[in-house]
Length: 549
Image (cartoon, rainbow, N blue to C red):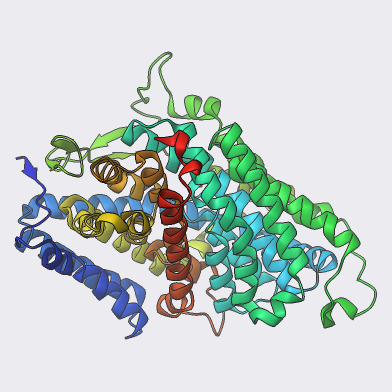
């Protein structure tokens, strides 16, 4: 069977959009206001999404159920695969005693918690985002902050806010390379525009992060660190995105930001009680504490190279065909090519693929697993001991893996039924205000799907078509989808659950609803600021987009 998406089944786009938004409202309402456990809220949202898809948008029930099944599987692999193996690395560091040494080293560098948040949640998190993405930065930085003594809710909030500016260039630039493929626009042009947008926000986010942590007065005391952290990151982000491309932006900017902070702290220290405690404790064999994270960087760095991808996926020479056993691509019947995206989202009816790629060798989670095993053995643990640690990690995240799976099932149901596109079309109909709402469409896409890449696939063509109709720069509007999307990353259900998992296991660990409430208004405010920036560019600073039409 073939089914064409209908974006306005009720004959009124505003009314259709309100109905389309009900599953998201149910999910967020249950999490934020009724304190329902995350997996129950996700299941309720999924059920509502399926009912609306079938009864209101007239999607065949078989296709709707298959879409939710595909999302559920994707939630376990590769997303869940990354999360559990990131937690595995952290747990090895803890159980071998090396995390205590790492804590002392970071405290020796900066005992001030505001500086620690900048180093870990922002700079180190950006580096991990550039290597891995898909939840790994939030999982790792959240766990590290907990180990340094941060309260669970504080750690989750800081990890989520810190993981904003790098998202569009995450996983070696996959969001932007995918956006270029979807729209046919030049990837270097898109990289330049997004690089300009996020460079501005890279200056802002470190200040924002510390304000969210300790308030304005506490931020003023460490403003030099905020400036150096964000300024060095933003400068490298701008240069690499504009003169090289999207592939190495986060890795380069994250490393430079870390190095700049280390240099700053050799000459400047914040005035705080923690810094005045006297001589620091001598640390023996400090290198061992970094072994898990060095292994993570080496394995993930290699895994994301074109050579490794070609080898691990078993590409045939001169082709893009995967090996049938190294990275099998499994079409999900009856959904595969059975759903058609329709104008104005695309120029002509276009069938949607529905495949599951089981790239178990080249997956980032596999690199994390091998990094953990290697680090554990270098730190003197036997394979039997590592297996026990891994089983404990699996038990710890069992409910959260179910939640992630249900969240992705909900996201895939709204994607294939076209309900999320309905909401995007309503925002696209704002006429002269479209440059302001263009980033908010990207924000909505990431909040719904949990991925800047998925949001770009979902709304990239819509942005391009709408821009052409309104005589705006298509490149600017398409790029703003990704720029605005990064602000939705901190509130998407997947990130919220990952943050609550990474900071769990403590007596006062927050549930997903508490984490969501702690970051929701930060996300809204940053998305609005991005909308204002794009609006100003489109109408009042035309010279900044003159070469991008």
